[in-house]
Image 1: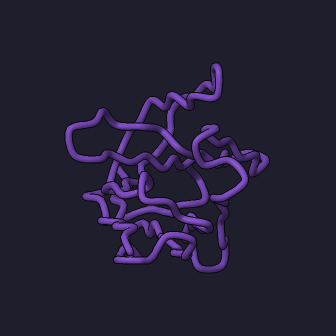
Image 2: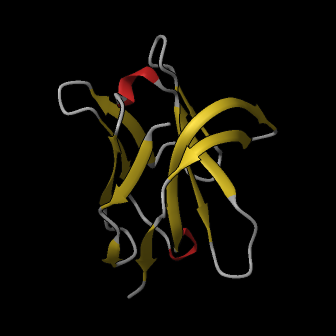
Image 3: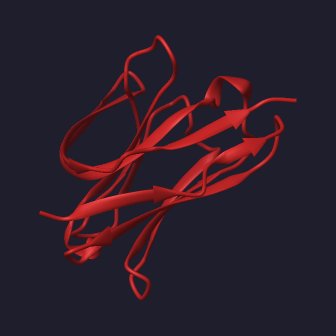
Length: 126
């Protein structure tokens, strides 16, 4: 189905900002709910944010709530993850994927993914 490509990762200092992009090829991104997840070395994959396709509702894990913002640009057919007030513990490979289902329980976002990208590295270090 849709193929996703993440971009925008890099090296930033604590307290800095990055904006990640998730672009689709072979289909229109606005037809899908999209989720972002991340994985740090030696850690399990962590769901961090989702945006629905129907009404644009957004969902966040407590670990990023208030600091990260997920959004769509319908004209550009791109989903963004704006990351502010970055912390060292945000260092991870970040992935976007189609989101088939999700729940938020006790501040943890669990996402059932469909298609996914290859990830983009985010490193937060002074």
